[in-house]
Image 1 (cartoon, rainbow, N blue to C red):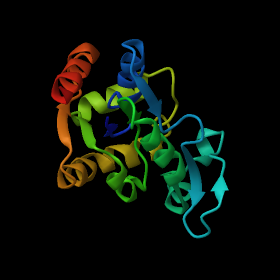
Image 2 (cartoon, one colour):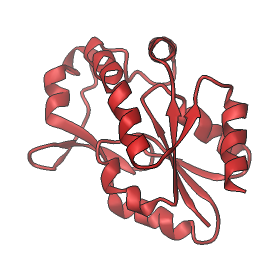
Image 3 (tube, rainbow, N blue to C red):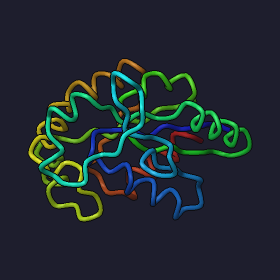
Length: 174
């Protein structure tokens, strides 16, 4: 059975898709949960806490830190995926180093206007609301999509309904 990576820019709908996959009975994990990923200092590699206050989450802070997956945690999910389909949904700085662990990669593609609207109006996550975060996320838009195209990811239109996107994913696995 496969280990599937579902990724996209912040605000593209990864967490919402994960919840729908879980609702439909699939094992689906989020890189933002269960210590799958952590903020790390780029120079030292040491784990750090993301600043609590929006004013402290500046461009300078993000220039010094990355959100990275634990290879060990992803390998553990790969072991679980020997018996059933397992999804990992998220986006991290070091995902390129983990691509070899996934049997299939999906990228949730979304236009800039919809992305900004989702980031600024979501209530379950404050990432992207700080001005420097919003600038970073919108700046990543084109390069992230190109990066995953280069990895052979299947591109999905994330402006479609959650049901439609999940149906497309599951149909392509048959």
